[in-house]
Image (cartoon, rainbow, N blue to C red; front, side, top):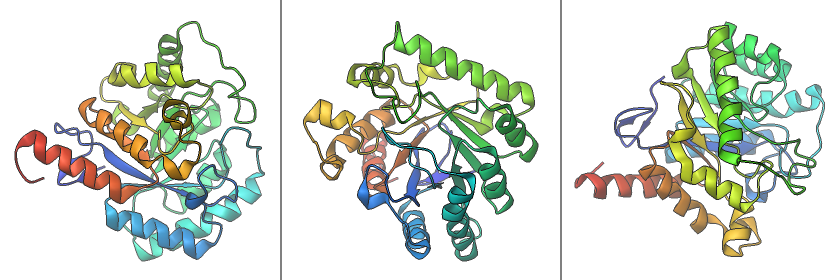
Length: 283
C-alpha cells in the first residue's frame, strides 16, 4: 500500500501521518457533522475527504460512542454497503476501511472492495483474524476496556500503558501467527474507549512505544473526543477542533503513522505546514 500526504510515503522515513477520514453512516455518532444517513451524502463526503488529502476513508455503520447499543448485521450492512459501492464507482482507486467488529460485515465489505478492517474490539473474534489473513487486507486493532454501553463508567487500571501494550501485543501476535504481514497491521491505543483523561494522556505520551512488533504501524483516533471537554472545557464536539489539531501536531513529532480525523482539510494543512517548517522547504 502506498499512501501519500504531501508526497511522503505511508510508514515512510518522513513519518508524516497519513489521514484516515471518518464517515459515519449512523444517526447517533457523537459528532453530529460526521453523520451521513443518506447514501449520497456519505458518498459525497467521502470523495470530498479524498480530494482534501485523506489517504484512507473509514466507513462505519454502527456507533461506538460511550453509551451506544449494538445493531444487527443486516442493519449495519444496509448502511455501509451502498456507500462503499458509490465511492468505488466514482473513485475505483479509493482505499476504504470498514469500521466494524462483525466478521460478516467485514467479509461483505471486503467483497465489495474494502482494503482494511478497523476493529475496535481488537480482532478478538477468531473468525475476524482468519478473514483478515485469508483476504490479505490491512487491519487496525484497537484496545477497548469493556463495551461502548458502559466503558466510561469509572474505568480502572493498574498500569494503563502496560495493560494496553500487552493487549495490543497479543492481538498482533495472533494476526501474525495467522499469516498477516506485520506491515499490514496498525495498532490503536483506543483513546476514550474505557479510559479517563489521565489514561488518555499517558497513552498519548507513550506514543510509538506501544508498537509491539517491527513493521507494525500505529494509529491515533482523538478527533473531537470527550477528552477535550475534560482537558479544555470544550463541552460540545463542535468546539474541539483546535484541541484536536494540537494532538495532531504532537502526532507529527511522535512519528505516529495514521490519524483518524473528521476534519481532513484542516489536518492536511497543519501537517504540510509542520513538515515544511521542520524540513526548511516546501512539502
